[in-house]
Length: 425
Image (cartoon, rainbow, N blue to C red; front, side, top):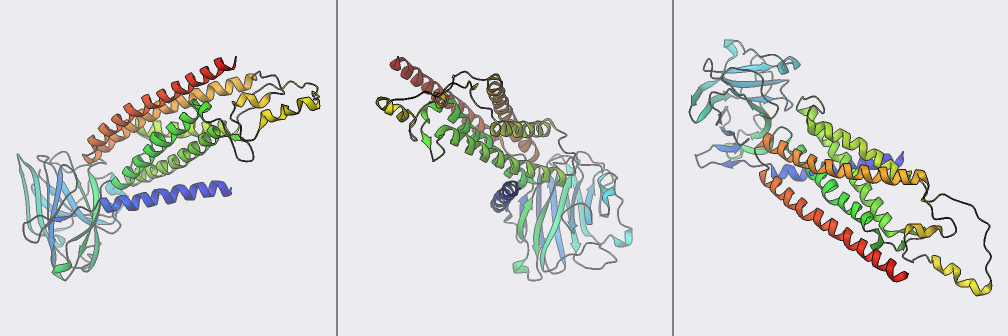
């Protein structure tokens, strides 16, 4: 139980540290040269500009999508529920505040606040060939009669945004949403600071991809190489006399399994945050299948059967002249695993033969699946956030170099072993 708890804690800490590092790279606000406005690109299709003072915030949300509804609002938690959202709807050319109070907001089209609570000024909605742009000024007046969600006139405020595919207000894609943290201040010199951007769990999904690549693009290949070229790493290590290749194989597979668990946990968190069903895509289904197969593979390695069918023979006796017999089993000697059974018939048991075949077959299946899975993950990231094409190119360059290299090392090890066997005859 202690080992399981340490593994869980290690996975959690690793994921959180990586997220903290990635969050720093997501802060991208800048003064756009147009006076006091600050701007940021939320996606490849959506830009936000804003400015504020002690009494109001003025925002402009523009998308390259033509005739598309757009939304920007103040949220208590950073989620849709408990938020007041300004929505521009081209079908009726309106810019109004909509209260999103309950989980019904996920499945029903919301209705705007009553006219007496529509406190926006300078509203404008423009749709043309260049796209859709919504502008408004929102008074910072913390009256519970008007806004359920209160502005922090001096502090960090969470805003959410989304946009649709048509001019009629309706559901948006899970990828067309996000949140942004902005500091408001009654001191104009300190206002408009962008604290961070959280596209639909972009940081978590990026961390998920990085961890998956470390596990399957780095650690697993090393573990496989140690087995394929085991005759290059046959020296005994430590007091228990385990082979170097086996220790490398176990350690790197364990690290790969641990980091895969961390990547899996991040994906679950992102899926829940996006309000989507778990594993509703081929990428998600493949991920859970790989996790199950990996668990079977790890347990199979732990419970691997003995290499030979043991046939008991009378213990041989040795004279003093044969005293050098024991020297064939020196602690640091490099020899193949089968050589550990010189006192037994070196014939593999049926269960060992079946185990070796299934272990290697499952390893091959996992490697092939991981290549497809990482490619599919990069493609989903690219579709969701409009970036990632360079990741895909770099990934396939890496794969095209890695696997020929692994194959070359394996062939070299095989040729070296064959040469040694010929010379020993």
